[in-house]
Length: 96
Image 1 (cartoon, rainbow, N blue to C red):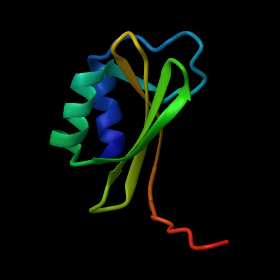
Image 2: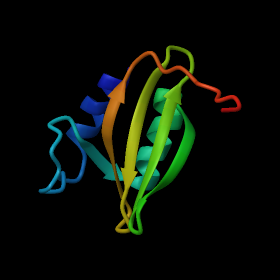
Image 3: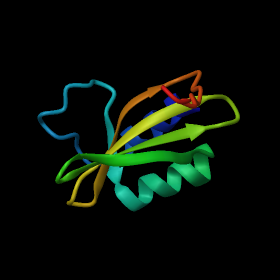
Image 4: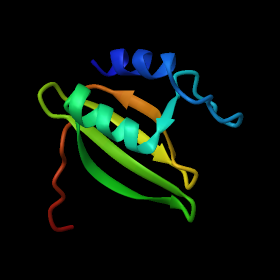
């Protein structure tokens, strides 16, 4: 399903930033991408954090089958899927 999402986004997305190094990067308006991930794909945002002062990363997971995506968001309102995969597993850290 995630690979199908990448194909859907490729058909109607904003162009990928020139400095992107991944061939499979798919970008869209941040609000539209979030809606697609939740409504079409059935994914949930699992975590988030700042990459740098102007770049925000989110991990999205489709719990029904373990597929995952990493979405990078920019201040201009654009978000890009920069990585995706399968077999997500939550790891709970115990005391060291």
